[in-house]
Amino acid sequence: MRLCALALCSLLFSGCALFSKDDGTEPVELVEFEPTVELDVRWKTGVGDGTEGKVVKLSPSLQDGALYAASFDGVVVAVDTESGDRLWRRKTDDAISGGVGTGAERVLYGTRSGEVVALSRDNGEELWRQQLTSEVVSSPQTDGERVAVQSIDGKLFALNAQSGEILWQYENQPPVLTLRGTASPLMTGSAVIAAFANGKVMAFDPDNGLTLWERRVALPQGRSEIERMVDVDATPVLVNSTVYLASYQGNVMAVSASSGRPLWSQEASTHNDVAVADRTLFLSQADSVVRALSTTTGETRWENDQLLRRHINGPQVMGDYIAVGDYDGYLHLLNQSDGAFAARDRLDRGGISGQMVTDGSALYVQTDDGDLFALEIKPLD
Image 1 (cartoon, rainbow, N blue to C red):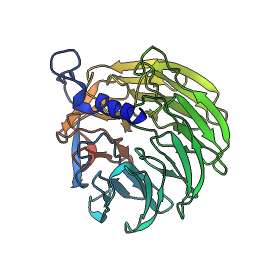
Image 2 (cartoon, rainbow, N blue to C red):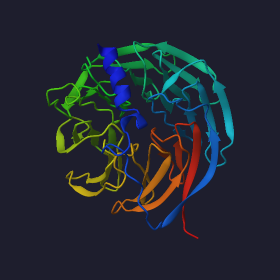
Image 3 (cartoon, one colour):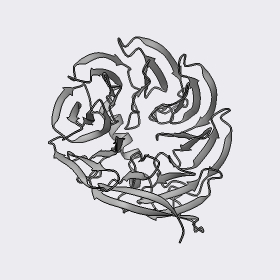
């Protein structure tokens, strides 16, 4: 029954399969606006065949002037962030469904067959692989000593970063019906914070896996299993001593990193990562309404509903703007201050579902067709 539930959710949350024309579920048409800046392509390169139409979110990772990315068909690349020159490329035999993560001189990814693989960050050579219990659909994370990774069957694993040996694991029984996805764990140095499909977020001692605290972000409501879905698929975000959490059909909230004590909570629904900057939390809701909330009180500062049902990904902050990508390959730039559109560019027609990353000078976007872009924000000529 569990497998059937996952298959159902693959249909429910797989881009264009979500809507048909003129029945109230179709994406809104894009509105015209007067751009105030432009998106300039610094460079573009390829990463295998992308997602190959599978319901996976593959996101690049930045470290020390290099960008690392992977495709579902097993290609992993390292690219110089300034020039776009390829540093190395490795073609594996893996179906890569979760990745990538970097740290401890490792490039980490998860596979459809439930393995975690570590490659050398220098040349892409395989260092180790560890078999887990189920598919990995989020990016493994490392603090240099341990690798934290979640499998789609609700388990959290801590592995030795040098050898891949399993140090401890925690099992959280998932509900009958869940979204096809998991959040990446957050490693703070003193805790591993993981989010689960039952609406809970838990903090664990990184040395032994003992529970430090747990917090319910959403409480299942309704009669049907679909109505009761409350997955926390948004990766927890740590800013100073506060962790920001968000769930599907539940809430967005701020909690104390040390105790899990709630600081504020607001009703929300998302299955994408959130972004935090300048005392504002930016959120792409499940219906593709973009919201900005105060990190102090949770009060909504503005909303933009002009991308309704366009299946946008999680927002990324870039300078005075936030960027979101949609199912049709458009990248939208919004003002942080009021949510008004500042620029728009169509990168390709394959869609943008993975999380974008930035180093402050460029925005790095991996499309579902396997294209990798470095984009700069420039004044209009």
